[in-house]
Image (cartoon, rainbow, N blue to C red; front, side):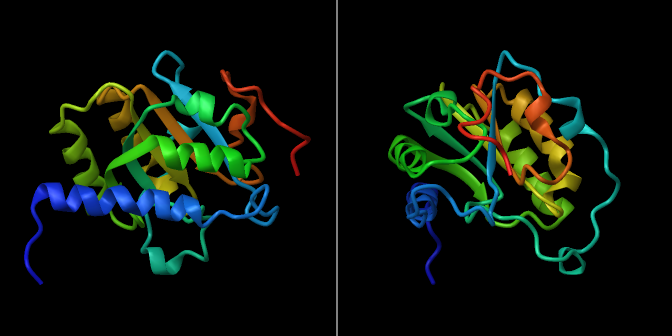
Length: 192
């Protein structure tokens, strides 16, 4: 297989997220998934509970099935619409929000499945070595595997001066981010 140029690689990656978002067809994501979206603009501090040190990550294969949204577990994108407008509520995520997000973003960097410290190091190096355009957003899926890297990657997002940091997580699993200060409207309907 021939080597891809950086532009070709970015073009391929730009297709991955919209494709994953397009897979969401129901009116609201299924209750089994319990996807909660937390958007933190640059001016709003990240909750201390998501930045706690949790020790060293075990091998991913040793962890039972983890929460997933079908999106890459970490990615950086640009968005023509702020995520705070795309996702005005924590929960539930509506199909219209997913469609609007799909239509407004362009992926710059992604890690499908974050399973090692080396992958987290690579993401940090990438963020440190970039001059990112205005409107860049860092997106992180918090689960049993990625929680070991949450502090360092969320702080790397902040160091890169991204306009927003977005955390997707299962609202029934700690840390409970819905009580932290937020600019979102909280819940569209009572949580599960």
